[in-house]
Image (cartoon, rainbow, N blue to C red; front, side, top):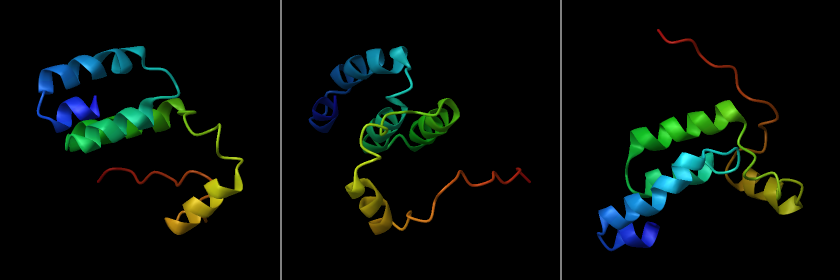
Length: 91
């Protein structure tokens, strides 16, 4: 679907993405957010990230016990995240 979008075939890209969005399981929300970000659909990307958080997306569980996962988080400055940050109420 990224290749379709990159080559300018929006119809094919949307067609390929639709089943993935429709399934809406607990292991693809973050991946769908990445697709929306690639497509520069920022609002959709953030909605999908929030959805992934809400449903506790398990897409990375298969690798989070690998030591390289913690190293990667450290490189990104995320190594101190041990629990979800408290949400700030809207003003």
